[in-house]
Image (tube, rainbow, N blue to C red):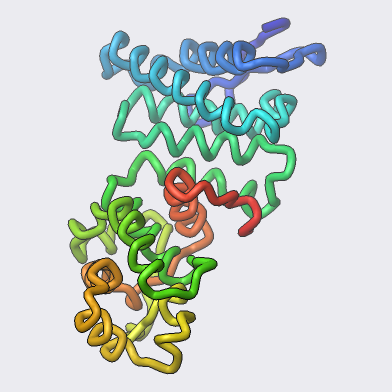
Length: 278
C-alpha cells in the first residue's frame, strides 16, 4: 500500500492516511488494509492473546473472501479507499479480534459487501454504522428474533396454496429456531441496543402477511386460523404462531437498524437482495 501514514481519529484509534495514488483492485488490496488496521490498533485488544486475535481475523478474512465471491458483480472496490468505509473496517477488525466467532463475522462480511456495492441505498449507508456496532453484540436468539419481526411484517410467498406455504415455513422455522430461547430480558437488552423500540400498547391477534393473504384465511381471525391448521395438520404454520408468542410479537417494533439486521440474517437463508427493500 503506497504512501501510508498513521492518523489519529479519536477514541485512541488509528486510521490509515493514504496518498492520492492508492487504488483498490483486488481482494488482496482489501486484505492488506485490514491487516494494517489490525497492526496499528493492536493496543486496543492487548488483553487478548495476540495469536488468538490473529486467528480470528484470518478466519474473518476467509469468510470475507467467500462474501466477495458472492457479490463480485456489484462491489465497487474504490469505496474501500473512503475514510468512512475504513472506519467500519477498523471496527469489524477490532470486534472480530475481541469476540471471535461470537462477533457474527459472516453477517459483518455481508454488511460490508452491502455498503460497498455500487447500488447501495442511502438509508442502508446511514444505518450501517449502527448495525455494525450492534451485530457483534447479538446472540443467535437475538438475530432470530429480529428476523421473526421482519417475517411477520414483510415476508410474502408467491404461492397461495396453504399446504405449500406450510411446507415452506418449515425451512423458515429451522432458520429462526433459536428465537424460542428468547426471554423478556432479551427484549429489554435489544431495546437498549437501539434495534427495537417498545410499543405503548401491545398489539394482539397479529397475523403474518404471508398467512393472512392466503385465500383460505381471508377475513379469518388468528384463533380461527389456528383451529383450521390443527384440523388439517398444518403443523409448521402452528409452530410459527408459537414462535410469535414466545417472541412477544406486538410488544416491540423494529428500528431501521433492527430491520436491516433482521433482513441480513434472513438473506443468508432466503437469498433476498435486501438493497431492493430499503
